Image 1 (tube, rainbow, N blue to C red):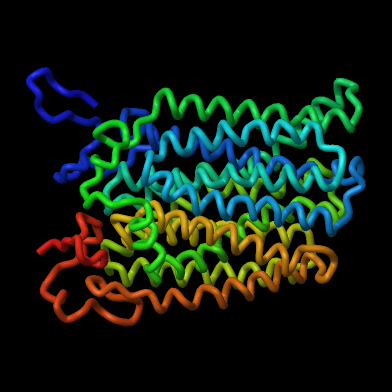
Image 2 (image 1 turned 60 degrees about the vertical axis):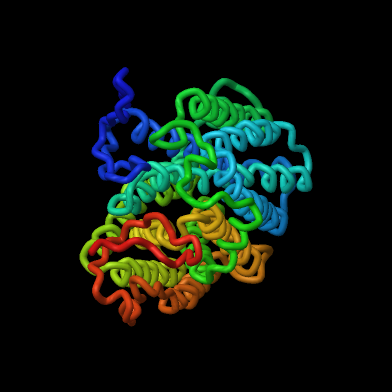
Length: 472
């Protein structure tokens, strides 16, 4: 970003919209130009480190459970605990971003939770193991800051793609850690370090990684194209936190998207928790191979979630909001069917193939969900993002508690039942309706028929949060 000395408006490396907010109308992933693309890369890298930390524990559970004498119930409760912490932190992160901006909110949470994952090296009992998993889960709230930051930097026509790529690349951390943590453990074992010490020492890596990315965000990040975040930067009436919070909570679309997200991203979180152990136990593969198979699920986020964002933007350009909603419903329904099939396949290679197809669709559905979120509420964007993000972890908690806690169901049966839950919880998307844009089965209200739709959220009318400017 450059500004000449005569006081003219700053110029940017990326083309921006004509509004005062100077949001980018293109995304160039290979660029690191400030402020838009630098924020993009800092955002996904910071969240990547949080996913890496949170899911650094599951791939080592076959070793940890022997050392700490963990039962299946302990492991299931720990998985639930890791998501419970994220529920509250994600919901709180939305208003935090509205008040202080995504940069400070994100970096602060990363710095607070980095010592938690380091403390994993001190765990000595099932209770302390569960506590650590609960506390480290708080770091996943940085997802809300990630999406808020992208929605503040990129305009409507590309916001779905920006959100999808930033979150997708970040979510790869959950896959990379499945591959890397067993390798780190094996490296320490090769140095003749005892197993009980090797797995503890391995957690130094994710802790340092998380601190480094948080510092980079603070030093090099920028909240908005215009500079640091201030409430005065936002072109909406000055409102206090309670009004912003109430405005978001009363919007039923946010609750439906939270449910939908609970059974795409929530399912993804659950799979990250159980998939390595599933292949290790059911197909008798070794620790490294189980980690590699599990890694392929998370690493698919490199392209699958961005594809979801691209589909959302393209469907929006062609068919308006109706296209975005139909795209979300179709993709998530297909993901649910593949999840049912995954639990029914009895061969190793068949399971791997179905899992790879399932990963693409379930992660694309997450990208499609956040292709709709920026259009729900301009003035309470952080709250809606927080609600939706929290919905993802609530879905994971419910699924883990019902299907993977203890021995009520075998893991393969639990996976198939999870697919059925996805199919059912995707149906409420049909109820989402915007008066100015319509829904899946209905067009816009009669008063909006004369407008040509441009799915670009602009300044809301003070009296009506459902009002957006439309292109004549």
